[in-house]
Amino acid sequence: MFEKLPFYGQVLVMVALGLLIVALVYWILPLPSVKTLHADRDRLQASLEEKNQEIRRGQTIEARLPELEREIENLERKLGDLAQILPTSPETGDLLQAIKSQTDQSNLDLKSFGPQAMRPVEFYLEFPIDMQIVGRYHDLGLFLDRISKYARVINVDNLAISSVGGVPDKSIKATFTATTFVYDERDQAAEGAP
Image (cartoon, rainbow, N blue to C red; front, top):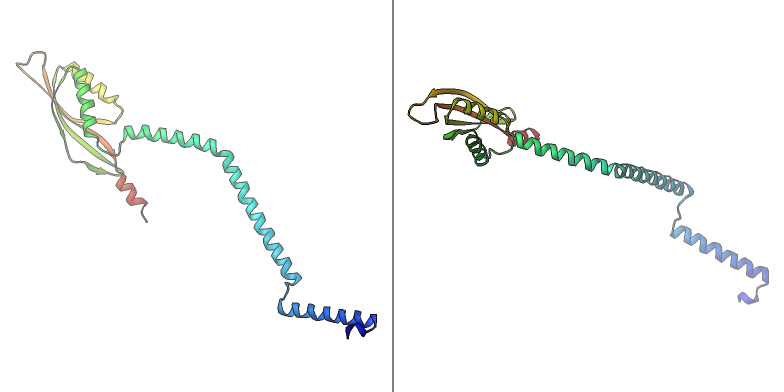
């Protein structure tokens, strides 16, 4: 029947069928409007610009990475130096060994080494140690000088010197409190907690 139609009739039927198919497709599958396409393009363009900015920030940070690594290494070295001066634990054994070494080098006898309870003060703890040494007056001065140059801060308080009789090469007995300091991490952690 389609073949019996004249040529222009066949063309009209084909155009009508094409229009019908386009209308059905448009009705069943709604295509996005031009406004929607422009809005999507603008949104994608903004997203692209945002990603490019992030990339530029990352490239800037990457360019500074060697400098930041050197700075971190320097700060870690300084922290290590500070940890020697103000450690986070009392390190009683190391301290006893260092003081015993200093008394031996100063020709003194360490008679007593009595660590006391730590006392909190602001962000650190005081760690007092009652000590008694026997020796000569000048050797005591040498010992105190060496203690003042020790890596850790050690304060000497309540120094009492008395004479000792009957001991060869030992003319004085000195009792004092050597106080060192310990960084109180718990105090700082409590401040940092919300």
